[in-house]
Image (cartoon, rainbow, N blue to C red):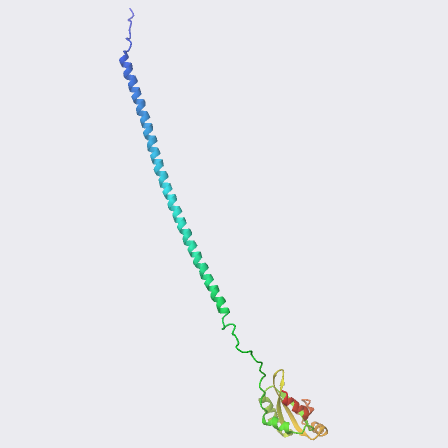
Length: 212
């Protein structure tokens, strides 16, 4: 004989309890999700505030640096302006461009006084003649030349100019005329003849002494 198992249907109260449990679980899940969303939102807001504060701080630092840089540039510009003004003032001062109270007068170099040799030659008759033996740029050299050749005849020297410098001319004379001077030149020692001496009138000698 087969046994017949008859399952009694669940009562309505059991079904109600299960439904309430499910609703409770769903509510808990919903609340949990909402709490997580709220927590995430609050964290995001705090993070955003922190980033905003950092950004504001950075802007303040940048603004401060810009102001400092501007102040430094202003100081440099003011310093350059002051320096330029000082240089302009110095360039226009009397120390650089002195103001003359009176026009400057051109002055000629003073004429050197005649020495004893030149005074003697200037007193000699202009018709007389001389033999020019040599010329020197230094007085000492002219004096040495005269000392070495004093036995050759009557020697004298006078100053003239050559290339804007003193030039000392050594002559022999005076001779009464050109013929006498020519004859004397032929009798000169070989050392003096080698310098190819030439004749010069005393009129020329006077002119060179006076117009040096």
